[in-house]
Image (cartoon, rainbow, N blue to C red):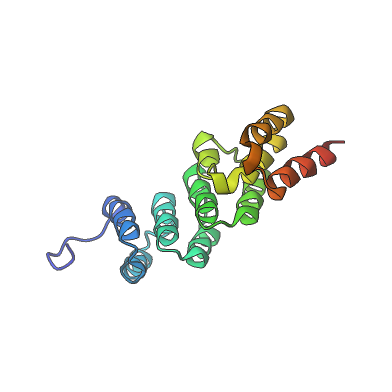
Length: 166
């Protein structure tokens, strides 16, 4: 594309980054990131969210967080991308902390945001989020349904929230 003289734009960059992430090619991703920076597209929330997702897929959590932290404005997609990055890499505490920060900034998680952390390895996050929204009984029922899969972190998330409410 570049050899043909076609310039990278918002549409092509947001389409290209997921493909690079799927290949796990961080070197190419960093090259495109540099091009995005040089063409001043990094301030676009959709481009930045695609960068976060690309770095996440490539296993570069720190790079994803740098992009997230330097975004001038964030939308639900950018929050989801970073929360999902942490969840994907087993960083449950960081996921929950970012959910807290998201709510502190008056941005409410939607179903997609919550779903991105809802795997067997991340039920503690889901339980914590349910508790934060006042759904203590739903949290308890989820723990009960998990049965043998219940871990200390899952029960701890519920107990921590219940104790804060009292």
